[in-house]
Amino acid sequence: MVKNEAQTTVTENGIQELRRGILILAILSQLNEAKYGYALISQLGELGLEIDQGTLYPLLRRLESQGLLDSNWNVEGSRPRRYYVINKAGKALLKGLAGEWRSLTQIIEKLLVNIK
Amino acid sequence: MDLIERYLQEVGKYLPADKRADILSEMRSSLNDTLEAHTSEGSQEDAVIQVLKEMGAPRKVAASYYSEGQYLIGPELFPFFQFIFTIVLAASIGGQLIAAIVEYGFSQAPVSIVGQVWQIINGILPTIGAVIIVFAILQRLNVHPEFEKQEFNPRDLPPLHTDQPISRAEKVFSVIVGTLFLAFLSQVAVNGGFTAKGGITPFTNPVLDHYFPWIALSLAIGILLDVVLLWRRHWEPPTRILRIGANIFSLVVLALLIQGHTAWLNQMGVHDFIFTPEQFSQNPTGLQLLVMTSFRIAFYVAFIVTTIETVMMGFRLLRAGSNNSVLRIIGMGSVNK
Image (cartoon, rainbow over all chains, first blue to last red; front, side, top):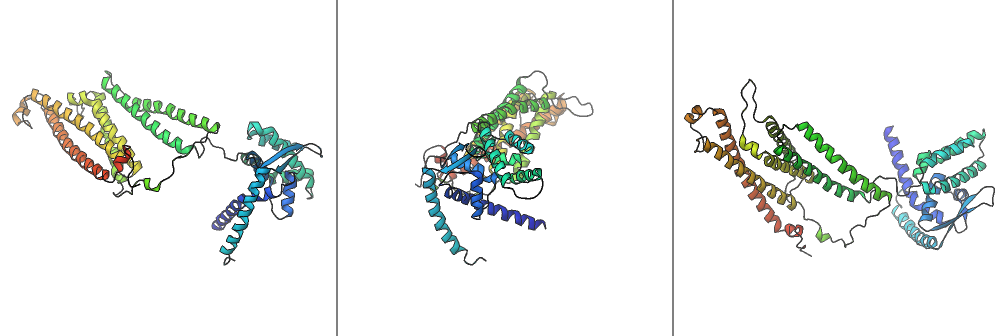
């Protein structure tokens, strides 16, 4: 029983680690138009990628501090919201990451051909 | 809604001060958005609780805003901290030991060993604290050390250890014996001589008393070197050079001790290597004569053993030098490029 739980934890940690790098690509890809956090969570969720708030907001802050996103407060709606949009540096990174992703997925597919 | 504010207040405690208000405003806005979209049945409070649970524990949520982690001394600074800390600690312990030994040597009144040990610990703790504080400040100021600017050249890697690892048991034994002997000599110095049970008058070894600080220093250096070897597990040119230096110092001390004992024994009329039974029975301090002679023999043996060890160590160092290790340490450049 304990062994099964430990295995589950190892699997969960592995999945989290795998997702960590992918999330940057996913977020950058959806910010061509300015969006606030909750809208981004909803959009990614509709496309099948679940991301919780505790992960998204710190990541948005980090991308912004790295100069990949711009943000500003919008007070026009029902409540003030912080909107994020990809900038020039972010787009350059997105292009690089997207190319790398496509190449990697092809390679990984080949590697996983015998894994069921 | 009160729960949301309580939650934000708790998260705010652990957030960086300069970004706290902004992060909390965004979190408040996002929580309200989530709550609005929440469709599950039940009371408003149940919905808030569920949303906050999904968000996560305040401390964990706040921690995720520190992208580089929260460290007193972070992983980038830690190798430098470890390096500086080891040097400062060794220098501090060495300095304290020398100070304690000098105090023993010049103090007229008996000196307590426990008091000395406590004094050493008290002297070391502020030094350790100071190093930690300096590095914690550097961490706080977000100082990023630059790693080796020079291009890495695998040819500069140190050669493989060709000798057997040093036996831990042997070194631990050596450290224990050295420490016990040091403690014994210190006790003799404190008591003003050798004491025995049964009312036997204590007798002194004036030569040992005279050279006590130097003997203690020599033993302390030996113990420190053994501790270093326990950590390094292998003899390396720097440790061999240190050992040769320490041995030469020990040989000088041993020579002084032998000379001192010989002078004392000559004064007592013993001109040969060992006293005669007549000299023993005629001398009012016969027991002292026996002990002084025994000490001189022991120092002779120690002198011979140390000389052999030093010569062998020198030979091994020269052999290592043929592999250019010595040239490298003394900065004459690496070969085999």
